[in-house]
Length: 106
Image (cartoon, rainbow, N blue to C red):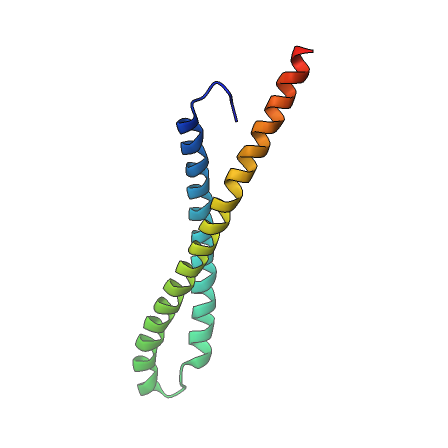
């Protein structure tokens, strides 16, 4: 972290990067879950024509529900991980910049 920037600005940058990472992870997770849900819906759907229409509606609803639940779980996990990792990374960066500053003075 820069010594020139105020702590609040540094914190906001860290939070912003964590939010962006979480958002990207959530988007990819939702895409994967929807794709998997579609495959499952195709396999589960019955073969008779009259039941197909009814089951398609219910399988689509089920797929939406399952994808929403999975997306929520993934976003929660990634958010927790990024929040845990970001302070550690910022602390390491600050330590490195202080070491470099000390060497430059010599």
